[in-house]
Amino acid sequence: MKAKTKAKVATVELQAHLDLTAAAPLHERLLALRGEAVGIDASKVESLGGQCLQVLLSAVVTWKADMVELSFVKASAGFENGLRLLGLSVDSLSEQEITL
View 1 (cartoon, one colour):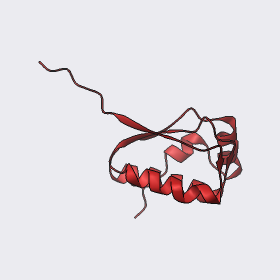
View 2 (cartoon, rainbow, N blue to C red):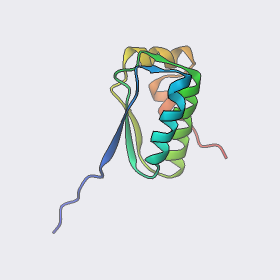
View 3 (tube, helix red, strand yellow):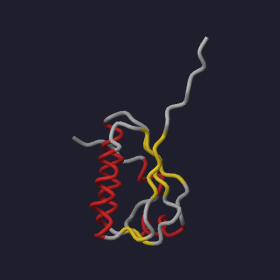
View 4 (cartoon, helix red, strand yellow):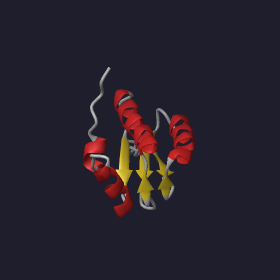
């Protein structure tokens, strides 16, 4: 009998400063991984801007619609503070509803 292998999870390491200039590269990186399980490493984030938050929210909704795992791991204090300033938390970010 074959043992079940755990699905490979691709890791996306977020930059320290998630500002306007980081939004397009983050979008491209996530788009290239669509359909794969992804773990987003936010351990180095010092600041989070609205544009990158929009990219991350879009990814959460897209991965849920595709029924593929997307998780946030190793959230830094800067990432958590940035989310808090924008009215969210890591938990609420992960729990975004799919709206069509």
